[in-house]
Image (cartoon, rainbow, N blue to C red):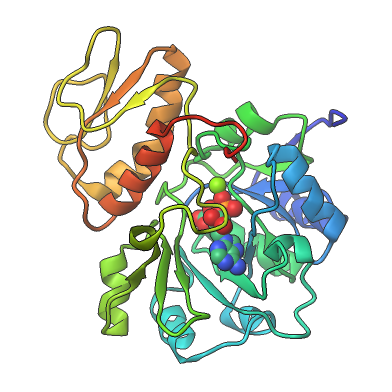
Length: 321
Ligand code: TXA
Ligand code: MG
């Protein structure tokens, strides 16, 4: 792929107009969301979406999330229903993605849905993302802005470390507050299904729905597109549930303990989620194997453990993305 000069933009009106113009012209622009930095492309422009896969080196076409600025904009793309209404009213803008049947007149490139009859949509809760989405005023497809299979980016520096010269611009607005990707809920089948644990705790969604989510991972961990096991992988080997560092290992801690970096010394899962990818990036830069302390499996701990299991999974480059 030919090398571009990646522009680093701020959040002034002029810079965001520039970012919106680049997107509307079919260029790739990374922008902050409350979860992670996204790699945005005009979702209606097939060539632009194809270049997302090329820039990430994503070997197969896994469906992407369409980002929009409002419920009304989402309703122009997907067939809305009562559960969507309740979840959107409770959690949008926010770290929740809903998968719904496509409308006939959706206008989104088939590369965004990877040919599925459903679309993942989300309204991010980040003021800069929302300003940009309003300026574009159309769906923006955006996977996380990292090379295929690597650690997700929570700062503009992470984005540039992986994609500099492969994208037109990055909008730098500091670190992401949530730090893990959105929770994905499938609403196109008979029962609401948890497709990916993420930045909104499943327990909160279940409390709003008054029913439990069907857990797809429990049924078949590899059934979902884009949910292949090895992912979020540092260069270094990763070992889980470690209570101390082994020979030559760096210890990523949780709660009060002796370690090289701590996700949250006070044992706060939201703080741990916000630190997860930044700490993995920092330890990986040292170039030694990484041992990770056990993380409780509830609330945001489910999303953290999901990402850690994938970071520790055996590497198979044909399945990494
Ligand atoms: O927080 C996030 O969700 C971030 C920010 C940028 O918004 N985006 C993100 O995108 O994590 P990505 O591409 O890294 O992950 C999208 C996930 C994939 O696992 C994909 O398989 C799933 O969403 N997905 C997308 N469309 C789907 C669909 N129609 N049905 C089932 N899964 C879908
Ligand atoms: Mg990703």
